[in-house]
Amino acid sequence: MRSFRLPRRKPSLRAAERTLAGAGTVALLGAAALTGLAPGVSSASSHREAPLIAGDPKADNTDVYAFTSPDNPDTVTLLADWIPFEEPNGGPNFYPFANDAHYNIKIDSDGDGKADTTYTWSFTDHLRDGENQFLYNTGVVNNLDDPTLNFRQTYTLTRTDAAGTTTLLQNAPAAPSNVGRASMPDYASLRKQAITPLPGGGQTLAGQSSDPFFLDLRIFDLLYGGNLKETGHNTLAGYNVNTIALQVPKKDLALHGDATRNPVVGIWSTTDRQGTAVTASTGKGAEGGTASHGSAGGDTQGKDAAQAPGRDGQSGWHQVSRLGNPLVNEVVVPLNYKDAFNSISPDVDHTVTPVVNAVKNPIVPKLIQSIYGVPAPATPRNDLVEIFLSGICKACGPIKADLNSQLLNGDVDKNKFTASEELRLNMSVAPTANPNRLGVLGGDLQGFPNGRRLNDDVVDIELQALEGAAQTGKTVPALAAGDAVDTPYRQPSGTFPYVALPNTAAVNQADSLHPDGGVGAGFGGTAFSGGSPWVPAVAAGGGALLACAGVMALRRRRASRA
Image 1 (spheres, rainbow, N blue to C red):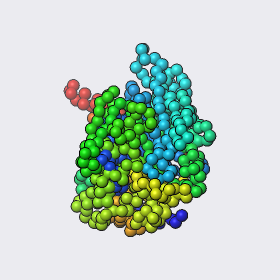
Image 2 (spheres, rainbow, N blue to C red; image 1 turned 135 degrees about the vertical axis):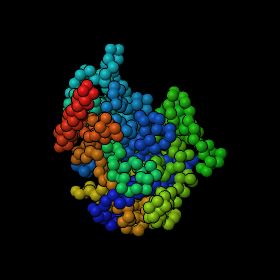
Image 3 (tube, one colour; image 1 turned 90 degrees about the vertical axis):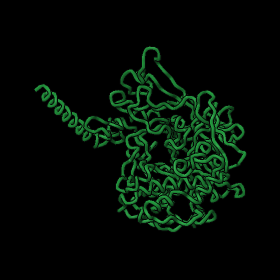
Image 4 (cartoon, rainbow, N blue to C red; image 1 turned 45 degrees about the horizontal axis):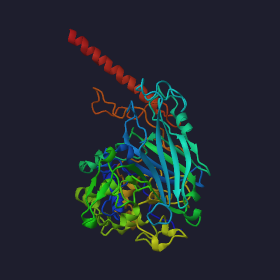
């Protein structure tokens, strides 16, 4: 396989047009996703990316990651996150998975846009004392089976493929939300207890983690208000998400079980609910579709019964959320198509004319040009179609490299290949000892858009791609600084499940001295992988703040008495 070569970017990237990175990334991924979606389009790094799913956080996919396991290279790790913006101190109910939803990770090994393998997690609630207690836990929790853990969840995991549906796990324990240091002094141990081995090899975990996505979300405020100096704040710092992690042998995902001959797979996650439907008018085709939703059972969205690509095969279940590449639904998909996109299967994407047009002629480069004077690349943008819809291969489009299209698989029927929005991974690319946050653009072929690792800076990568770096082979110097947010708030670990342990401190620690909050956001507890030298420093700083506030209050009181 020929290397996908792009110049390495110099480490001197500063807060120049960081703002553009955020905008470009959204537009880029969005554009690519939109390139092939029909009457309903939109989906990707979904932190509240569509109107309906924003009202159903338990079903809201936030991100998907896929990479060859660095410490176990015969396996692949797939991560999917749900429930955006979990404030750590969100008691007393905290953040359980929905018990009336199916959480899915889907794999397309032959490139037809349909799932060849689906892993499904279904959760059950268990309450020890609902009559006399309101607390999530009634004492210190050291083990998942402690009676002090008043609320807990278990799950069933199934695998569906051409042979049918197989139950892999039953009554497997989910890790609880991290209530805090007093309640769960060793949360790392609790999470480790929830890692469950799979029959035939592999392991899985369902539980809370620090949100691994990183970017400056103020980009939606008119691209930082045209002021590039206002970038560099990781808006997701301190928040948590619910993560489902899956590590399986490569053969379990590859076409015909042969990861050597068929190394490329496409991955996306979905959520299914019962009783509701997102419908799209078909009278005017892709040009005139309108989305609506039913109200059965109080749920918020689903898939039209007349079009069932989102169904999981069981009566009454409908797809309400979908995510493959990051930021597609937020930035590329027009408002009229976001909800519908969340309800369709990737094999329908190429029929969505408005979305395809938005990918080939994206809005973001024009916006960047009007605000910052960076020239927009010429259209049509077939390079974006290749990055997001077909995968990268010399026969796929203008990017002359073979990287991650299922067309590279030896046993794929090329006549059945369908352009579709998926996160594609070439499992034959070995992990690197020195990952580059810019992935393929930085010369690191295991990084995004070839799969996605936890440290891949997808905002900066997508911005550069949106501005034409993939087709020119040169990065855009004016956008070198991206959004000035280059790493996750918490660094991932080197072993499964890789995601950082959840935060425990309030994100918005506002007080009379700091009405805008942000004091020590996200720092708190000792439940961090390897510990953190910031914890004592922040604790000391917080103590100093409280002492200072106390002295000031005392002086004011004495003055008022005088």
